[in-house]
Length: 248
Image (cartoon, rainbow, N blue to C red):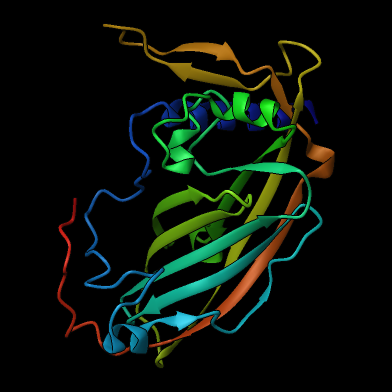
């Protein structure tokens, strides 16, 4: 048990170290993927956009005591899949997106540059318990890279919106079925420095990171693990789309 806790603390320390990079869009792929050409997943502005956009596609699971995961919108063209997943808390939780930690600025999640609080400070001021959200796929677990990047936005009602850019390996048929592995892990005050999650940061001109305690530990006993199984139909339109926005 001690070994498992140590491994989890080390993993989260590495995640929080990556979170200090000044980028609100954690990228997992070395190769750039094509943008969602001319299409906003949130507000389709043309009939042809609506035709290739699947709203609340067939799905099962994703529910839990801490939060529900729902695939709100998706586009699939047999090569790429773009997924918008809503994570809605069912308790007084502040859901932290993958790649972020309590010491990161809250405005990175909210998109509000006027907010000067850290995620931890915002949670404390609003009487919210922080909980870390992770999401992966069954394909990733098998060594086949599926999720290449995750964009995130925390909405005022507490919903954490995750936009996933995925690649799909060759398969038979036009329908694509996959499973997302979803977890929510609450943070609790650490009983000691030894139990606390660490975060890393680089001081000026430093070659090695400096680690500090977040003051929090993982509530393993109340961790939520759920699966979200979904099916997408081929939009069959990827050769006709043109980007209306720059990659930047």
